[in-house]
Length: 468
Image (cartoon, rainbow, N blue to C red; front, top):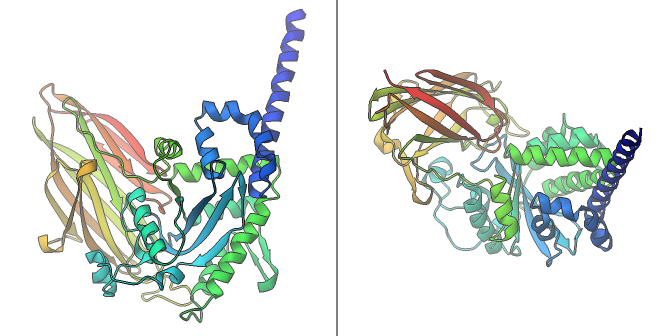
């Protein structure tokens, strides 16, 4: 009986403690987002031990400006026009924190700082070929698939466009916005006589972005500002249960690379990288004993339209053992464009042909790379080669046009060194999923093993390859 009473008391203490922790978490969140930094220290103390266990102490202090004022740029990426780090950067929000509180959020059109950049920067060749504009601009500067690399370039362009220096970059895709609407419900924009929800927000945002647009127009920035501030107003009023759901939403979007976070070299940055939230490309590490492999497919919509609303893709890879010292890897990629229109339709420039500059990143040890598009060999002069020596990766890219209401098939083949002296070898494959793509249907077939799954995040595959 005594043990039972002790057990009940212990359970009650656990429940009370959990309640205090959750309440402190709610209060900490509320104090940050409503800019009441005077409550930060009190609420943080209750959670201090938990933050330390998960290595979040430095991150909380760094981001909320407890160690000094912080300014971050939130890049609002439209992944319906996909780019290497997720989507086209049409707008951005300037986020300021001071002493544990979030100050006013300012939303701006990307073309404002873009139009103030003096001088000339040569664009990457594929961008020049697609747009024939002759210069590299802020709006296209998320060109490197490695987000920390792109973030530094984006920051440079912001400063040249007379914006203040950023303490970090956060890239956000539409997936997060949709998830937030499902949590908060619709937003009433009184001045616009609109009710915006997860079903119509994209259409409304695009209409105000592109309908009757002219240089110097502020209608896009005004609408985006109203939407962002309306969402923040909703987030300020979340109860404890909703705050926990919000944490889960943000976590899943970080895990699925729909939100990317770049911070300069700090302890917080180390933690972000360790969690895989910084959007970096992973370094390939060859092994003398096993067969390590890497695969990253990166799309860039250079058609100046929103064709990705209608584009689906799937990947199938097959490994064949050639001899005791090498394998051949065959990759088939199928793009299907279900656009209803053959040319983009206003407002929104939705649909049309998918003009995709496709890049593939592989281990630097691969040999004899060849690519075909719809059965036609991609000539050497059409291939753009790239070496990422610090990552031990080799990339190559080429244009793929997928007309509306049709599909295209890409076939990529190459060889890799291997060691089958023991008739089998352990095979480890790292697949990175591009931000902005929600799901990546994928299949791998090797001698003695089949893996098939729709991937929502970076994936590690472990298998054994048999040699007969």
